[in-house]
Image 1: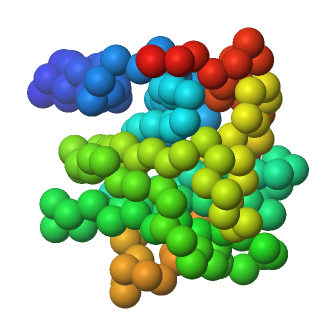
Image 2: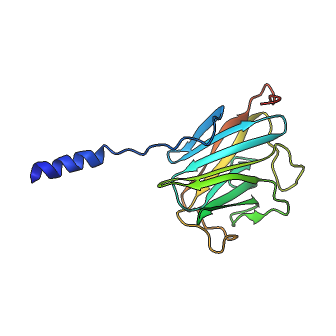
Image 3: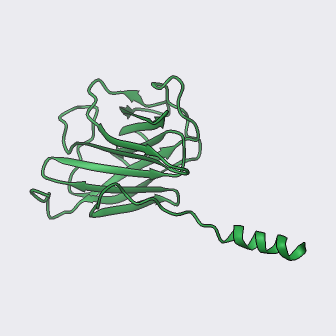
Length: 181
């Protein structure tokens, strides 16, 4: 009996998280945290992101002017009953993000697996919207968060607690935006 229990514990300890492949081949990717993966591509006018986050709650992603949680252009999304929802918001203080007047982020695809919430979304590099942060060549301050629960009602924002962070990454190469990719 002892050997069976020890063998069972050994097998359980060998189980690892298997990363879900992105919905398409992306030229760029970055791990924002051990459980938050970002994929992206861009062309002369738009950028597309795909997030893979180990949660069945809400997922937040944003472009920050300073690297802090505000001021920032953010998107908050989730999957509930196999239906994806995405909101274009912005932050101005240590309060829940405010809904943008113009919804410039567009949800392209969403799904939930055993462990992950996957959201694929895009927007123009420069929306000419004062509530959005233009995405330019060079280093970009990105922010991220996630929650363990889906907001109720859907327009409400659930507080992320310590499940958040920021990272400086190059979203668009300094050589400029490729045309036709």
